[in-house]
Image (cartoon, rainbow, N blue to C red; front, side, top):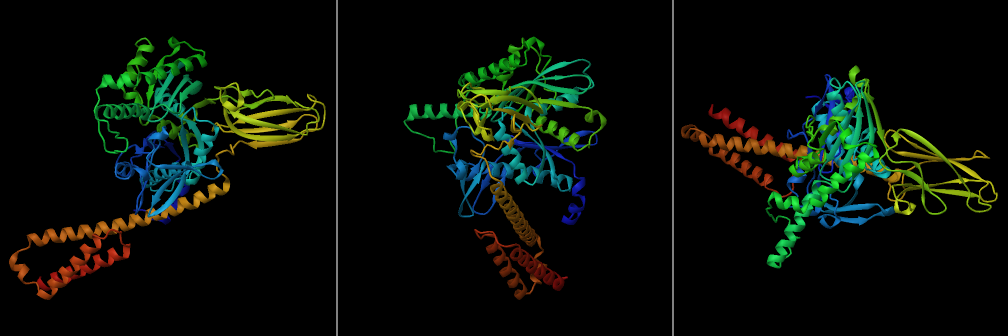
Length: 578
């Protein structure tokens, strides 16, 4: 077993990891011996529920959190698109940042979505460190392809709070394409058009990717819906059961967290027919954006647990005229697999075949600025390859204007305010009649899909630059620093609780073993034990039982002292009758 000192020495040789931060489940992997290895968690599972719970005594993450949700719904946090179905409380915090309210160790606590995501990322980091025996620092994290700029930045912030150096944010279907591309690279002799159909628990993405025999993986178009996934199919069933029960029994069962209903497949398919159709319509839209016909698609790759729904496969296969659906890569692990390949490539830890791979991604949504007529002037159209830099010149709209203000938006609507506002920057301009002063606006998107903007007044050269952080609902550096401190505090609390639980279990197991052996001990041998020694031992066993039966978990020292006392009494008794 390696100690902390060993970890400190080896921390710089820990491989980079790839994390699929999923809506319902998360997965982590790394590159080793020429291939990706998906890392099992402490229960041996290769995926971990994206779920965090708070109780009177501890914080739970993963299976432990999910398994107690029925008993503790108000303090169990998971991703749920429909606010009506949130069992936990959400309030509007400072700077309009939503905060989740829970009770933890008897006190009310408030957490941002980034903090909850950071807890899940920290769990995946712990899973990797436990497996590797080394401290992990570098990671590639995946996001749905249709995440906007602020959602990507929030994910990067969450990684930072979790103690990770985020090498890159990558789109989930692009990660899956990397996994598929590496698997197929030896079989591809010419350009192959691949459609990645990624239907997970909470989001849906479609990507059309071209892979050639030289290792170039180029995303042609993406489409999707961040509010469509397996949970939405579940919600349709929940609503159906609630309405049916209410109709038959005039009783609302919404508050019953343990209510169960059964449904036949045909009814399930009928209830969700509209959403299934929406999936196919998204595929059609992606084909249009890629300027392709469905007959141009050579392979259809299924990713995400919800692609196992038979009706989804049936509709998709019918749309592509009976074409076989590829299940060559693991639906639940493909995204983490691809992220792990990219992480290793960025760190130079892979073989030459992977180092030769070239990934060309796209931005999912158009980016632009609001102009005088309140419309959005697009600088970077959706599905533009990234990283990229684009520029456009704008003139003043009124006489003697001293400042030109640029509101930056992301989206596909004509009217600027109907899109997602990312931020605003200003550029000083010389006083002049309208249309005479000109500002050159430059948009730059990095490999993470995160935008930087700058504006230069043409005649004076005055420049103003802004890395878009979307101040509306975004975290300040001070808030992120506070989250880091809180994350460390909770990590230490978790470690302390584990130590207490381990000491408690050791004492409990010792008592069980002793009681089992006492039942099998020879009566003659038992009679040799002095009554005084036996009474001392029985009293100590009673004290130990009372300690274990306490509602509050005791300290490590109390459990260890009790164990030492019992062990000493056992040794004393055995030495006298031996």
